[in-house]
Image (cartoon, rainbow, N blue to C red; front, side, top):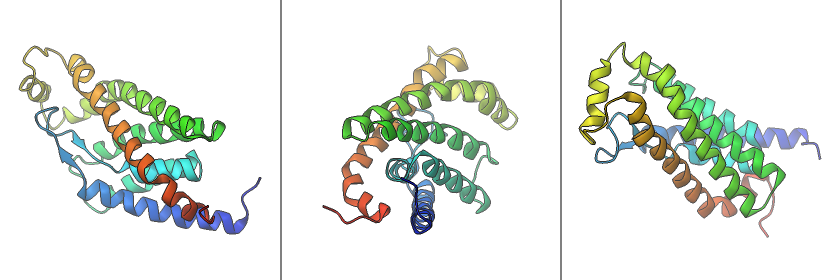
Length: 203
């Protein structure tokens, strides 16, 4: 069934609202977990609104929420990485919410949502190793020497002797766990708010 004009208008409004919430989460609900991973990598819940958008309206809308969140965060002057962090966040979060939304579109059940989010979190975790190693970290090295970055990992696990090993040991499981934590929170609130987003009366 095609979305009517009023439906599209509602989706645009809901996307703007969820993007605003996502931006607030990105600014105020980011925090390091220094005993688990170097402090320049932070836990955040800004994928939660994007995941809700992807499930309730479709994967494209979820990706739009991710894009707007990072654009506003960068243009508003909250970036501490010159846009590198925002680029990384966009790429990885887009993979996460788009995958989750696509799987859910073809299996609109609780199990389908869980499978989609789990696959999305796994893909995000795997891709983060490659994007960080080949793109993001080389950019960081322009500001922070590679030895310093590696030293942050070695402070937690001295046996880590290379960046790729650090990414596999620390970043991959951390990124997957972050995705699954956002999934858990989404499952706790989705049923209550999805009728409002879609403009339906809750049964």
